[in-house]
View 1: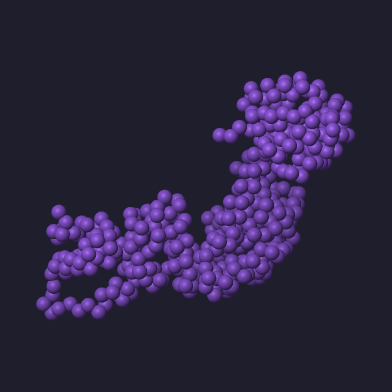
View 2 (view 1 turned 90 degrees about the vertical axis):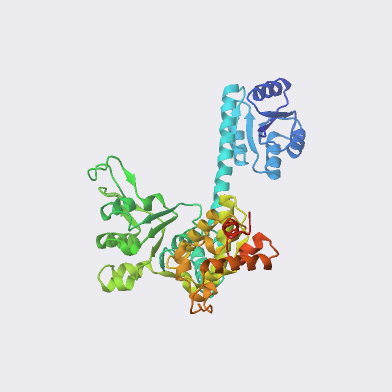
Length: 457
């Protein structure tokens, strides 16, 4: 592992030597310079992580050197070493980009603490940048798969919403269509991306607890309130709150949510202070809310307040042209996760996937491909890797046997199977892998049948 490199810049040899020895004992890689010109050359050649820079230098001053270092690489940490009492100069150095300053004569232990804190801050900053980059990749456009007309319309709407200041969005669609993924995409592509995204399933939280989860509570507000708790609206200030399964929210809670949406203020349970927050509310449901309104299960005024920007996600059966694109995407995902090398899917399996109704939508498709990747040992996903319910519900034509007529006297199924094995081997010039693919069998299953019928000893 590469050592942290520190550049010590001071015109006094004894100070340079003392700092070098001390820092090397702490495990740092240390280089030094006696003036600003040499320091700038070393910065370009050695790429140090941190510079200890004396303000009083011969030639160019420490402040000039600081400016040039920051122009070259603003990520390099610079700690200024100043004469005692030169506070104004130190403040100016901080404005120019110095991380911190320390006065002469300095204590080596104090210097070590300042250096360690600076490096920890730098590491934390890089980690935050890495996580933000990962979030952006995870929820960015590449993960919203689909080139169908339906999905192009959805993507166009999502981009407009992300760029807008719309405070409420309603996503409707069947279970498994990717409503939360769309909500996250909108958040991470918006100006709110650096603020929190918090989600809650309104159907999974009892009505008595949902108010506390959203608005928070003060200590002693109810029996179990042993400490103050901030709610999701408060925690997500500046960001996005995703209310999943909003259609299952209890009527009394709907009224409280409506009031919050209209006033953008709330009080914690048991509290008197009003809190104002700036959050985007993205709600989602798989229920028909207009029907729920007719049945008196959902507030008409809340519905129209939530659906300022409506987004409808079509079920997978209405966007079949996206199925194979999704299949290939999930194959790539699970190849990485399980260290597999699946390159595609057989024509027979592909046909079944295209003809299946997909009641569980994209979530079901993802689970099917994950299962197939785990169970399969070949470079191609085959019919036998698919769940029985998909094979059973596919049309008769999918099997390719719809035109086969059973003779009046019947047949010996064992002989039919043996003949199919023989023909597939002859057509493939006894290449077992190719023969197995012709019958949509895995190589292990095919070899079992070869042994069964005497083709393999």
